[in-house]
Image 1 (tube, rainbow, N blue to C red):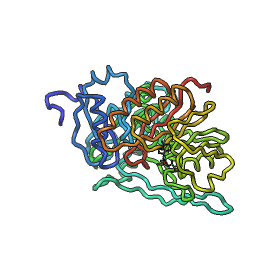
Image 2: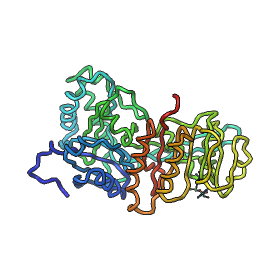
Image 3: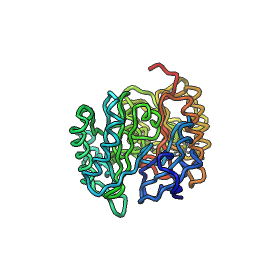
Image 4: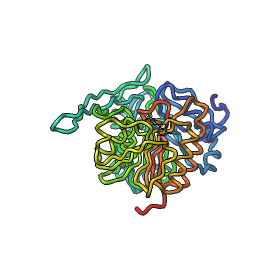
Length: 392
Ligand SMILES: C[S@@+](CC[C@H](N)C(=O)[O-])C[C@H]1O[C@@H](n2cnc3c(N)ncnc32)[C@H](O)[C@@H]1O
């Protein structure tokens, strides 16, 4: 439904999200469950825009999770202009006054609706694992907006800022990485059509409020390695979660891997130098079963309890989302694990309302968390984060 014409735009808070084509209704469903007065705007494939009365957002303290989006642009302003220089001028008009008073750095991402292809990793005897860079940008819309145009907008904005807000221009950068500095602001421009885009400017505090949904990777896109030597493609989930979080498994860490067979996640953790207790009804690939840092426990994942707290809980068990919520709640509230990476598998769309329960539970018991449909996830969302109450 379009916003009523007689209502001025400023009364609305707009959330724009980029997602994989076909997932638009999952994203708008999440937003509408959080904000029942949200109204969807007509958008090209792979994009969602909803307008919410500002008062609804201001009075909302619940964690802001939009798990099915690739990237989120909170408080977005629509900008339409016939040329790159005019688009850039309008962007500078908006962000200049907002950022000029903030002392810290700011990250500046311009993106369209394309996603990158995976990097292939191959095991090369004697030389370890190599990566093969076969990269191209895959457009996910029938009429992709060129990456070149994004580059032009990005450059034009920086040039105009240099002239109009010199100091501000120098504090800007376009790096794409998982983490932000505490005082870093975040500016995104999503080009959804040749002459139309959405601008989101977040101060460090606003960025913090949206930490569970926004990604430090441009457009929420990143290249996930495809490890040919791993026992299963599921290994990519852990690789992607590590990259998105910016916190890989480390040498010497102790992991419990529930629902571990044939061993993709265990493989990743062992490669990192961690030790793994793998719990499944079926054994892992033979070479992993013989690995000196792997202990296999044949049994029910839901009945396993660690003798002492571990560094990581992994779970890729196939079970109803409510059952996984119980499992994760137990591990987190009992402080059986310091960090976790857990997949939540859905049957259709009707059961994903439970993500709000996950978000509530995790915001009460973690220092940081994300709930996100990874690029390599199908109909599932991955929860990862750090449990509160452990010494840093
Ligand atoms: C998607 S697969 C896991 C893939 C694995 N993460 C990997 O990287 O290769 C799900 C696994 O969960 C196991 N599983 C399902 N229910 C289980 C339960 N109650 N206890 C233990 N394992 C279970 C299945 O046997 C299966 O091996």
